[in-house]
Length: 396
Ligand code: GDP
Ligand code: MN
Image (cartoon, rainbow, N blue to C red; front, side):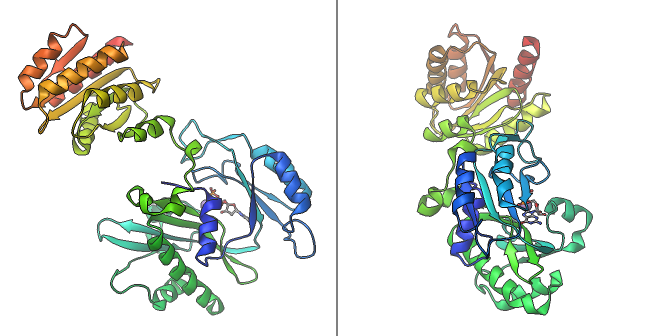
């Protein structure tokens, strides 16, 4: 689960990680109001510059025009109106982009240097890994490719926990002035503390800046949480923004279906995550392109299959459906019955290929063949994939 920058900054603040002060607005009207009323924009101690930032669940906003600076507070409402309601297309949104519904206005910083600081779970070492780089503001993947020597990474021993020397090593690697070392030691400590206590799976501060006043501050904040832990994190759960999620994925989660929308046109429905991955691969191998990942779980009852069909067909790009079920615990003739009943209710008008394998597969396939429905039956995985790819091509 992902959250917005402003939400991540609120969480950071709670854990003692320094962030700029700011306010969230959802309309130009609201922006005008806060600019005329809030102490962040009035009085002696107001900042010299403000940053106006689009809140979407994607990075790369700066380059797409989603981050603007104001030198006078009067300019802010106008900048908000330029960003709000706009669809931002960044390298992380996909070509359709993301519509901006919220804007964060914060005090600007006097930037001397920009760094990268992040934490991820490294599956190879099975540890939290701290990542830092002198190349802040750039894509870390790009830095890793072109200048791997500019990236510091350290897998953390969970039994050892945090020790200040870790923060000092980061500080030295980044070439920070000695006077700011304690700030870095504390930021790394608090970031790791946040990561563990809130069950994060990824935290990125890009950039973490050193200001001309020698202060370290998190200018950007990107956080992802482990979906399996959200159940025990009420605070995190409350930060979910459904408007940022794919409506079909939200619908699928209501029925405990594991659905991820993709860009292709062949929908697949499979029981078991591993088999679903393999099915997508084989569709690609046969020359097609999967429209989704969908694991319907072990049971594949009529109700489950019916909901799955409805969700799959909610994607207008879908031109054919490939059902691949392995009857291990459930018998294939029961699955076939479920598929027939569901297909009759949902009224599928595009090609449908069903591959059944496992217990009583023969009987199951026979039921599908004699159902009177336009279902193509397959025995082998590749055979099924070829059939659906061919049917979709012929359908054009
Ligand atoms: P992203 O493009 O989605 O990663 O958004 P960021 O929050 O990282 O902002 C993009 C860039 O805008 C940063 O790398 C900074 O260079 C710049 N920026 C953001 N806030 C400020 C600020 O307060 N002052 C100045 N001078 N630049 C800023
Ligand atoms: Mn950034």
